[in-house]
Image (cartoon, rainbow, N blue to C red; front, side, top):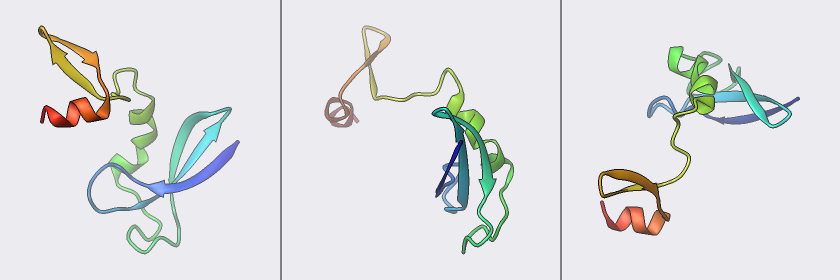
Length: 82
């Protein structure tokens, strides 16, 4: 089991989260007690961010649409199409 301090991805506030992992799998997010923004608290998005990261439909790499289908792409190719 390990812990890593990070920033919550739930919104633009930048709250601190303590990520808990077991055997390489993220299992929970906890508030960081001395964080200057969140001051030891997390909103519902912060508490549930570990579930979002484990979701099977989560995008983990850039994709582009070709012939109506989403296909993997390099970050450079995806950015040039924006």
